[in-house]
Length: 280
Image 1 (cartoon, rainbow, N blue to C red):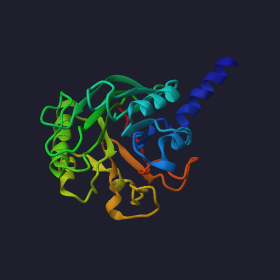
Image 2 (image 1 turned 180 degrees about the horizontal axis):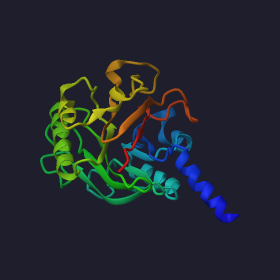
Image 3 (image 1 turned 90 degrees about the vertical axis):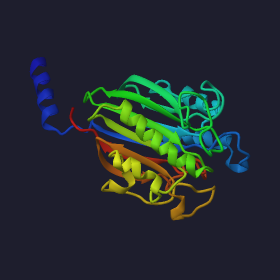
Image 4 (image 1 turned 45 degrees about the horizontal axis):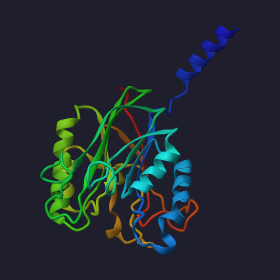
């Protein structure tokens, strides 16, 4: 009898289409805890961020602006489910904001990870071009356990002041992806880019096959992602993006219709892409 049940389970597994290869990636600028935000301070928002993760259940998560206390807060509350990588941008260890990456341990095996600086010396904690701040990219090389598909996830935060830095940063990211990622692998690039995708700085990404999921997903959302602690929908504030290559975008959302327990999660709304991995 037991053998018949096992055979039936196997037959059902092949007969019912599997959704295992459909994944969610979230990009979330959490607004650093050092800012003087009064009623929107991190202490009043941090529980809402945990509610966000509990309800949205991202398979991949990229944080921007996480100071050490925020990074440790996320690590403490997600360590059972998520692996994490990231270093402080100021010293390559713990000082300054971290572009942290989280991945579900039950879904992925980590094959490698690292950080590089958006500067002329990317292997050192340095300021790049006309940037106001040191800027980094955190990356992780993953193998999706159920499909065997390799996924390279890059998470970043481009400079808010320097136009040359934003342009050169995109070029550096493209060069790094070309050097690091083998042909055919899935690539996800997320972050607060401080630029609308209509700006020409993003052309090298398109030339490298990395497309804005907001533009190509069949179900999509073009609402603003920066809110400045107030409601609105200024097209110039569409500055958080997810670019992809080697997968099928399914839906793109700006998470601004729920509070998750706080009037605002951050001065940015999180964004989420659901995508499908191809068979290996």
